[in-house]
Image (cartoon, rainbow, N blue to C red; front, side, top):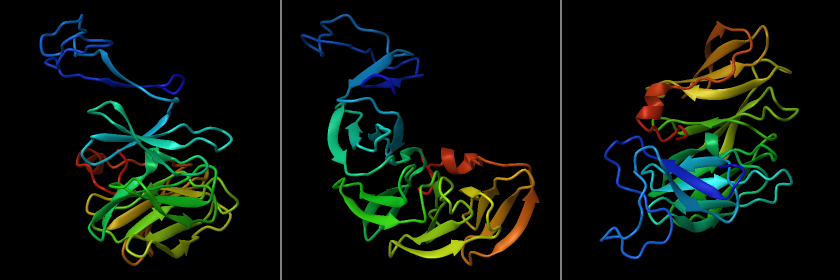
Length: 248
């Protein structure tokens, strides 16, 4: 709830367990007035409002950010079982957790998020919840994508003078390895991967624009599909199968 310090979970399971919203003398005995679990909010009280979220692959934890305009807000990790904050996240500016990704590196699961206010990618260890690296980019970006079959993560800088350049990051070295600028001066943004991870699709966000298809391994352009100012592209298969390179 972006305007009040609460996180709500609403179950669409008709057999959801009852919700005890408030003090309870004995949960086992049900000594309180319960709400039906179906379609009623289970509330987690927070220290401050959050309005952007990212979930771990097991959906046990939600990472949230307050998106304060002055960049002073800190992210936090909320465990959805104990229903409280379990860690703070050291992520500057205005992180866009809603388009973050996860990936495996050296036996650890990492999460990476772009930033709407700063030219940086924050990389977070999802066991310690520590930020292990800030990867500099050409400017604030909106969208980040990868795929479990790809070594690379792609990010735009569409809120900056470098709006025409996609940047490619190696998920092993955590270094930027390429900058792609097929149409200088024109906005290129919002990467999405195909189901098999072989191709990355970018939006040339212009009236005479296109969907530009890149080979995800060689980083070479292979095709253009004409479109007038295309923006969001979302791979439903990758979403419902919880691809690690897609936000959830």
